[in-house]
Image (cartoon, rainbow, N blue to C red; front, top):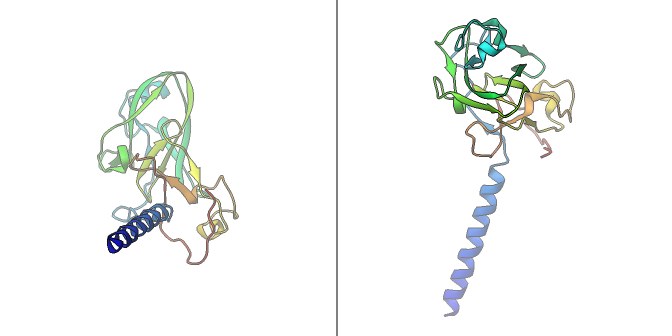
Length: 194
């Protein structure tokens, strides 16, 4: 009887430790394969059913400059804001003014359209990260970064900078778990703020 109680307690301790370790593992930076199968794009377009609202001649036009994102070298992310009327839209990110390479929902190449439902007129900021191939917007996603003493090593202008997207925490698969996707993080002790 006593042996069974000890085994049961030991099993509970092992189970609790495993749960704690798996919780902490989700906080570590995630190493994802860099989009090295393709060079950096010359442009990124938000193409979808919203383009005619933004001055394009038609919707789903990968070459419409009105919905090109601008590359921000400080953040190493493509981004732009657009004023959109209320409505239900869909979009994805074709690269280089063509559908040859495009990313949809959850950064899937040629993936499903990304829904964007606006109950009222809104300024919507779109983001594309070529390292993770994720296209998103500030209506569907929380745009959060992890400020810390490591940011200058990532290329941010300084450390503890909550506006630098080089330490952008991304929820690519939509599971409400944000992850830090990085390609060249310097080794060492790097305190993070969540």
